[in-house]
Image (cartoon, rainbow, N blue to C red; front, top):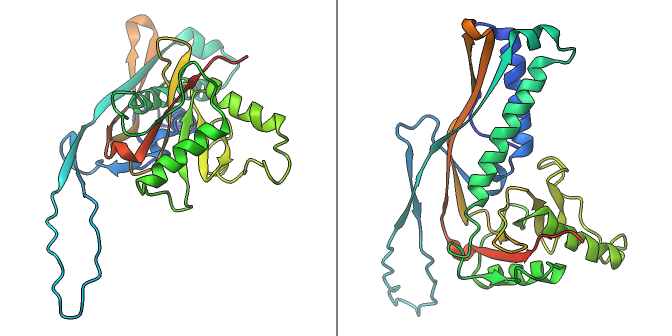
Amino acid sequence: MASSGSPKLQTSDTALLTNILQEAVFTQQEKSIAGSLFTVYDMTSIPGLTAQIPVYPSITAEEPGQTVDLTDTSVTLSTVTIAAAEIGSRVDVSDLLAESTARNMGSDVGQLLGSAIGEKIDQNAFGLFTEANFTTNVVGQSSDNITPETILQAVYKLRNVNAPTDASGDYFCVLHPGQAFNIAKVLTAAGYATSVNQISDLGNSLLSSSAYVGRLFNVKIFQSTAIAADSSNGAFGAVFSPMAVAHVLKRPLRLETQRDASKRSTEYVATTARGNGILKESYACLVRGDRIIN
């Protein structure tokens, strides 16, 4: 996953910690997809923890007669406030473990930290996918399996409100793996290897194939365990425009170390600071569906 800002390193053991930091950054970017799907606002060089994001209303054009003055349109600007908060993870490595392991300790510690940070970033981001936040457009039921038709319904609900797409003309979709399973199952049964039902491979370069499912109806579909389950067997995914939700980056991944001589161990602490908020809820469609794989 692409991420704005430069990672920072604060330690005297530069060689080892550089290895850990590189592995942590790579793993975090592979695990976290929110920063590539939402509109990112980089606050790394801006004082303060709160972003004030302007949201412009839609206006209409007209066709006036010759010499007829255009109608005055008063623009009322609204603002979305998003506060960034710290996300962190810590791993303690004892001297005995560091001296006895046959594995690359820097790589292992980096993977642990990066994975934990990446998963938490997405949990916070996709935690916005709720019935309370997205009310204008909703498809599916928590007790029903999601099908390709469910995605198509969501697409046309967004088209109906002129929700903007990404540069490729696509919307994004994030589902629980159990929800994504049934889409793949239905298309497989229909013979998706044919030209009619082929899932496009376009987008695999966007991020790791472990998260990317495919492209269907001009929607890039991703799966994530960060999608929360509801009270039953269902889960809340979403099809959305990149302009529907904002992701604020205050501080990129940072790694620090602290030696505890009395415990004969070293603490490795990774942190980042981020926030998320809804810019225009009508530009997203909540997708409810069963998450049980059977």
